[in-house]
Length: 139
Image 1 (cartoon, rainbow, N blue to C red):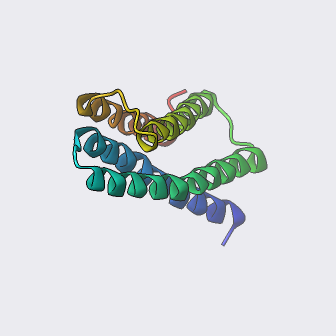
Image 2: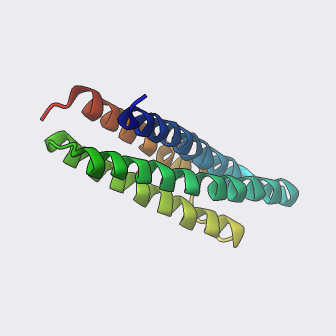
């Protein structure tokens, strides 16, 4: 086995795991925005908090292994610059999730479940773009 293959596999595992959290956390937000029962709200907020704490190290590991691949093996091309810009947007999205979670924890959410349904689609669109860039390397 070569080190490039191992690093690439680890990068993919952590990216997939991170995305599982990016897909599920906003779904919890949708439910929180619709919930009126205090006990259910507390339970959903606890679930969201635990998920966020779990997915943050996954994001850091995905980025770490991605940088290791990039810097260690000299991967280059315009597609990579576009991918890195999208990864930066994903990290901003991750940070936005933290702020939204904080607003739920503090009981000051001002957004509707419809807004969260749209917000939930952002990582899906970014994932499509990243995968097509990586596979097709169009530029």
